[in-house]
Length: 316
Image 1: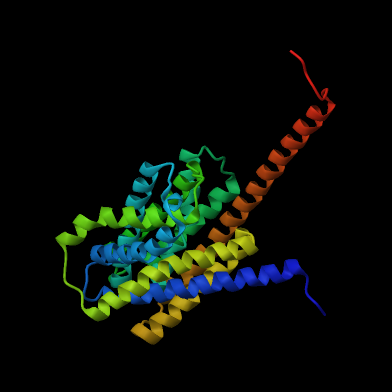
Image 2: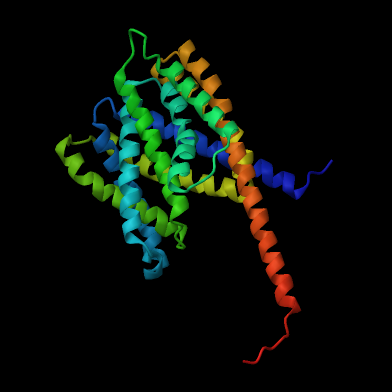
């Protein structure tokens, strides 16, 4: 029995998406390893430095047009958010098990919903509010704030998630029509420049092996985004959302086999609360986007019908 082209695209999209998760967890493991010796600020700086350098040959190959950008200031702001979010995320990988870091990172859609209500004036229904509240209950379960071993510094991972969510909302509000290569390059470049001074303040000369790992991190970050773009070009983001949580299984396996981490019951229970909540929020967002798109298409259709009834030439 042959499969339809649409079905093939769906499975190709899933394959690219899962590959992006594998690359992401591999990058996390390398970052956690580097964090044993180097400060998270320096790790973030060098990661984006090598990311910038790995993109520069492509920029030069495509010529001066590749360097065109319509909003330089926007890239600076994005770079600041990204540097803060990644630096805090890297620090979280050092102080917390990979399953905890990954689970708390799943809260990004919850923060995005709250921020979009204030900055994009999006209407949030009761069902989405309930799902968001339930999701943050899951966060409390994961963090175990009343437990004797509670580390307040793990709260920084929530600040990291909030920064990533702010970046998502900012990208929605200020859509820039320029090449993806330019977006990647300027994001990496300004994140590097913003991180230069903080990195110097905590600088420790890396070994040749560590520099090799940073090169892999820089290339891996660009490759991860490429895989995501390929995934979204074949399959809707909402259809891929459930597979996002394969990342938790990958994180648990990597944490156990590479770092000897055993996931706590509280982390798994919290994940069981957060995952359905965020899936519901993503699903509702997808439905809302489709309704808005259908409404826009209908408006254009009505306008076309009106224009069709007008005379072919209008003299005035």
